[in-house]
Each structure stands twice: as structure tokens, then as C-alpha cells.
Amino acid sequence: MKDYPKIVITVGDEAGIGPEIILKALASEEIPKKIKFLIVGNKHNLISKYLFLKSLGVEKIADPRKLNVEDLKISTNNVTEPSKDTGNASFLYLKYAIEIVKKTSNCALVTSPICKKLWNSAGHNYSGQTELLSEICNTPNVGMLFTAKSPFTGWRFNTLLATTHIPIREVPHKLNKDLINLKLDLLYEFCIKFKERPTLQIAGLNPHAGEEGILGTEEVNFMNQAIQEWKIKNPLVNLSKLISPDSCWISSAKAWREKKHNAPDGILALYHDQGLIPVKIISLNYSVNTTIGLSIIRTSPDHGTGFDISKKGIAQCQSMIEAIRTANDLLINN
Image (cartoon, rainbow, N blue to C red; front, side, top):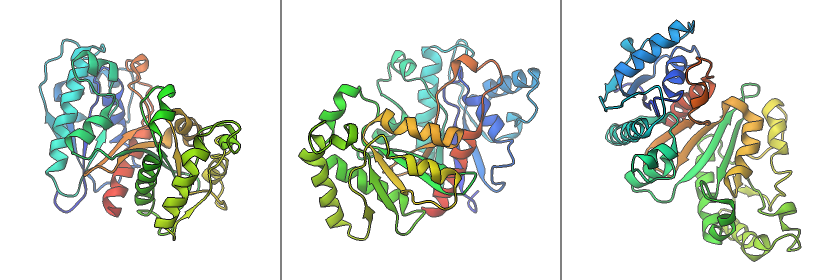
């Protein structure tokens, strides 16, 4: 394992589709063959899921009995139904996996979906996996970035969120000049892994980026100044002026399918849904959530636990495949 990148995968909430998409992804021909994997979870539960999926007629699926599994026998009453027990197990799987990746060289973490509500029910008061990762890695200045590599053109589409899991009413109060500068630093550091001279873009907060203060004042009060200050510190980076949110991702949509394009390499969105709606519409199942600014590499599929379909065997595994491939790319380009 010393000769190749290593990827540690958490099963997430076992009542969800995490185990299913892992087993489907690891059977895919799209996964590079030389990658060495370690799955963190309960091996008995993985085998039970495998046998259940086979009984449903799912054919292309990896057999967990042939996989490398860190078998954590955490007690759960019934892993087929979401509960505080499955939430607790998913939390402990993640904590254990983080420690493995921290002490292993040339290693990355891929996390399957968890349920924030069930974490809280089990007494783990975090708003998501990103926040736990930030705490354990002692890296408070992290970013939630969504990246996707177009299967049509090979172009990499990157959107970073300035704020993450907070109520919409809190967004204007969280934004400030320092935060904008910090997030631009993180976005630039990520984009240069794939392109020497990336082009960056920021979406405005208000309609039409505030229309010079007529439709909102955040842009004129501090955002324009933040951009100017960052450009002075980074004169070689092409950073455009604030873009109206309703048109900020139009060029990205074209670049996803057309080889000749003039789209930015990285976009800074100011709040969760402002960035995630266009990302998911443009890239569909190819988008990957990656936490940047950590001391380790972490990626995750860009979707939730899928409790409603977890017993049907129909979960798509493309985002998990992309999460694994992106983790591998980041190991190579790190």
C-alpha cells in the first residue's frame, strides 16, 4: 500500500444508501485499478446489505467479503431503519476514519452521507461532517467546495460556498470583507492544483449584485472593496467584478458540454443554495463535495442519505465514483 494512493471510505448512516453506493462504486470500471481502499464500518452489516442487494437482482456490486474493511462492531438495534443508533454509529465511523487518514501518508478520506438530525439525537451536536473534520484536524478556516469534471469535455467545474449550513436570514450577518478574502484564498489554492492561471468569479448577494446599492447594500458596503484588496495581493489572478447571481453560472453550463468556452475555473457563491442549485442542475450526479483547507484530503458524494430509497436497490453511485476519482486526483496533485 505504500506505493499507491490510499483511500479510506466511511459507510455513513447504514440505514441510508451509503453502503449500497460504496459496493456499487467499487465494482465500477471507472475506478482506477491501482487504488487501495479501506472501508470503515461494520463488516457484518455490509455483507447483509450485499446479500440483500443481490436478492433484489443487483448484479454489478462488490462483495464486501473480498474487500479491506476496518470492522467496527458498534452496537445498533436495527441498521435497516434510521435511528439515533445508526446516527451514533455513523459519527463514530467518521471519527475513527479521520484518525486513520491523519496518521497515514498519501491517504485521502471519502465520506458517505450521514443524517445531521440523527447525529444530534445521539448527542453529537455538529451541523455536519465538515464541522467535525475541522475540529479534529484543528483547521478552523475550511471551505465547502463542490467540484465536478465534465464527462463531455474534461473541464473541471468548481464552486466554493462562503457560508454553509446556516439559516438564510443569517447570511448577510456572516459575510464580511475578511471572510470574502479568506474564501478567495481557499478557492485559488484549490484551482491552481489543476490550472496554473485560474480565472475566478464571485456571485453577488442581492439581485443584479445590488444594482449599485438600489437592491441591497452589501456589495457597495464591503464586497467590492474586498475584491479590490484581494486583487492587489494577487495581481496575477484574473478575478472579475461581482456577477449578478442569476447569470453567474451561465457560462459554466455552456462549458460543461462545449469544449470552446470562456467559463471561470472557480466561482465563490455566498450561501448554500445560491451555489448548490446551479451546481446540481449543471453537473447532475457528477458533483463532489470536498472540504478544502483541512490538513487532510476529504471528498464526499453530493447527496444525502436517501432513506426513502435505501431498501430498493436503485441508488445511483456516480457521485460516489466521482468522489473516489476526485480524491485520487487530489492525492496526485497535492
